[in-house]
Length: 135
Image (cartoon, rainbow, N blue to C red; front, side, top):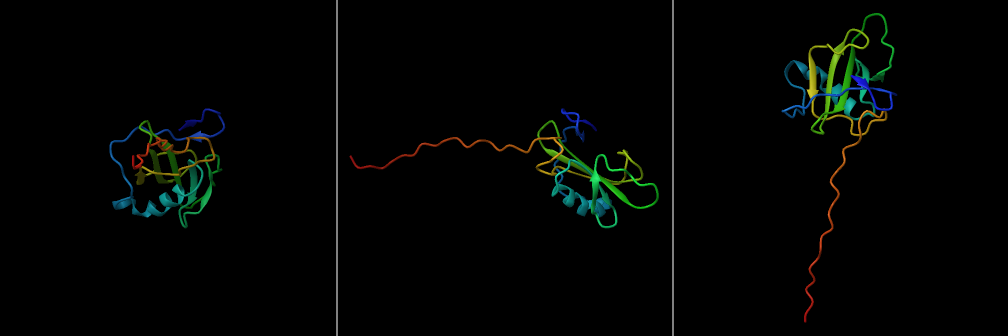
């Protein structure tokens, strides 16, 4: 995790991966819902309530003292251009050591914190048409 180029937000910068994962599996199934919720919102780093997966805040959210289940999801664009997301339970502020975790190769497509640009699709090339006109 590092500051973005404008030094305004904390951003997750993942390493490139060899495998593409689209779902949480095995012991990570309890994180599947928060992964989907995270992918549908507009922050690259967000904390969630573990009871109902409701978003609590972004990277600067003040972690409360006391008990409760809290989840952290971090998304970033890796070297090969894929957005990667990790979600896990956390016991304290600014910790990335939660286990189990769910890692998938998708996430929010557009983020408001400036951590990564939306995916750009190739520009269509113009095609020529052949006309069938009698001579």
